[in-house]
Length: 129
Image (cartoon, rainbow, N blue to C red):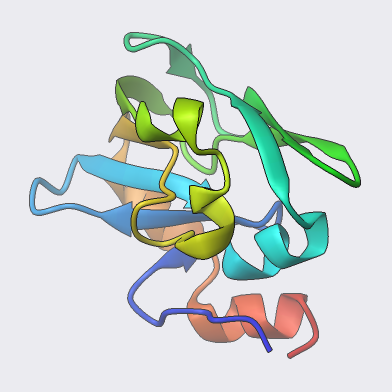
């Protein structure tokens, strides 16, 4: 059974949004469920700082032994930081998806959009848990 923290918001594409102390900056990564479905992550292609994305725009790709998947921005915004640790150790996404395995920090264009994402309960239903 996947770990679905109740303090995060989720997209139907299996990305999560974790708010920071500064409400306009969020951490984005893939959910525990998504990393489990992908299997062992071997490579992640992430955007550069300053890149801007609309909601549901592709912001990168994740490659696992079994498949390659696109990563979708759950909210619109501008990349403020990229997790450089994933370059040398992409499997951090498997070991700690909600902690050390975050992918990008995004300055959210409209912070209220976060509230439109799935709650943990709604995400659990979405994945059949």
